[in-house]
Image 1 (cartoon, rainbow, N blue to C red):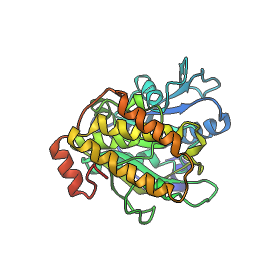
Image 2 (cartoon, rainbow, N blue to C red; image 1 turned 135 degrees about the vertical axis):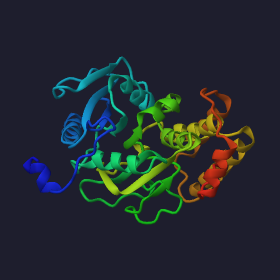
Image 3 (cartoon, rainbow, N blue to C red; image 1 turned 135 degrees about the horizontal axis):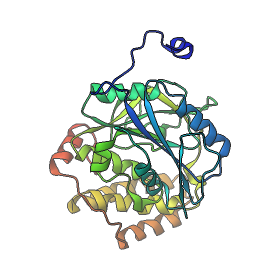
Image 4 (cartoon, rainbow, N blue to C red; image 1 turned 180 degrees about the vertical axis):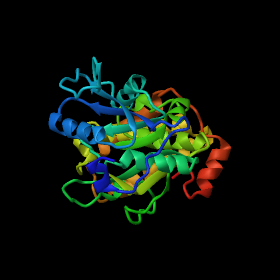
Length: 308
């Protein structure tokens, strides 16, 4: 055992797959090329993962990645296809029984992170996708929105969830392929909710691992110029793509009511939000695959009926 490994966990026994080899992980890092230092740090943290076999692709969303470490595959896209479609584009270029998606401004502090996550998936076959706790590397307080639960509680508390923060996500590859990957039409916002819903619809659960962490700087979602429009449009699309038609107005209506209450305190963004809301109703996002009634019953029994 190397000195580095023994210094971290001196008695840890590596995981092995059914054929006796180390678990294989395909890692997809998405970048627009605007954060070269952060991208380098992200890749160093991935390459430092122990007791797993890695296949890594860096997707250049609108550019050709250069200067990558040896063995890392560059996947250039001619133009910015959006976040979910960009992640999907990297999947054919990696191999592995598991997939891990990481933002270019995120990094993994623990060299046993992937090994630990895979151990959780192997120990509980019901878990289809896992999202770790996201923490700011400078120690800034974790935003409550980064805890993907209605009843937030402590950030270190683990639980099943119905949405995902997409900055760092580990999943089973067979499941990811079966549910159709990330929702490409969204471009930005709410693809993590759809992924979680479709994992539940496939008979698994989405899991928030509060005892695992990934570093990511605290940022504001409103830094994106189109945030308010896409936030609203994609909420409507989320319902139209994933809910039985009878539930669509209930889901959109409840979220609209929440937004109206929020705007009594801060009216910023109300005009583009309603522009996106209207766009969501009049456009067809495609890819409709409504949740089964049994899935809705499971979600409701677990505390989150898909109308909230």
